[in-house]
Image 1 (tube, helix red, strand yellow):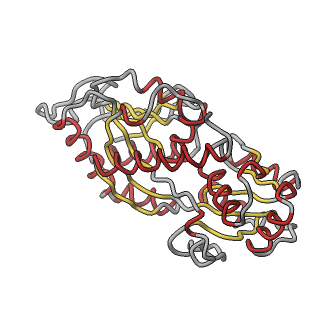
Image 2 (cartoon, helix red, strand yellow; image 1 turned 180 degrees about the vertical axis):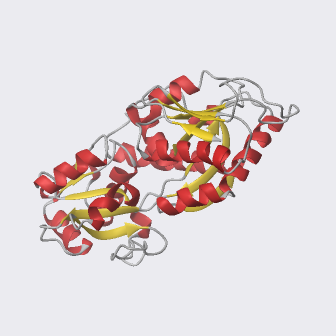
Length: 329
């Protein structure tokens, strides 16, 4: 199948296999028998967009399914603008949405979204991506402990940046602060719309320290512009000379987000299993394994109700942390 790239926000990227979008294929009525639509409720180039396009590419390039797939970006408000649109596609197993648990749950709580993930159909948790705590190369901080000591002595003097308001980055910072008996409301955190904005704040000296995904930060890390103080992962990240938060005894302070796929409400159990089966084939493909490797993502397969259980548990966790931060009230 050939990939035709079409720009961008609220537009589609089509994987063309000889069928028009929405036209049925000769699949004998088996799922999928017509085009799939995958929503990325974030901007082009971000993690959700990368995940959506990775799934779409696997469908075509690795011949997981002989149907077209489109990726549509609907960014804004921590994913809740896209979520509100997606929730209207009730009962349609050909509509899928990628997301990650903590970021979207944070957006829901912080923006008081009338749509909750519990109203949708859980398909599968797919992967986890490590985050890195970084400082500019000119920073005097060489270790995370020294930075946390400074924050404990004078909380507002350490300015953090990275990710959306109420996102996993801010929640991890809140956990680190709590471990040092620092009130969440004393944290100096500057939310950003993306890695580029965070980079500008760090390199200009307007921010002391940043936290974001390794995938977002790797180019600047490899260029020597950023120094990594710690990574949030089970094992050290290849190519990055930094300890894990687990090594530093800080694993419990990190908020780990699970990335996955949702379908609309109103699907039958049989339809849910059909979609799970398709995504299972995607995650076993060589195309998807390349996506995992390229983005330093670790597979964490949680099909169906297992994924739903994780989302319910993290909803409670996220609500509590954001409450301490004075958000979502």
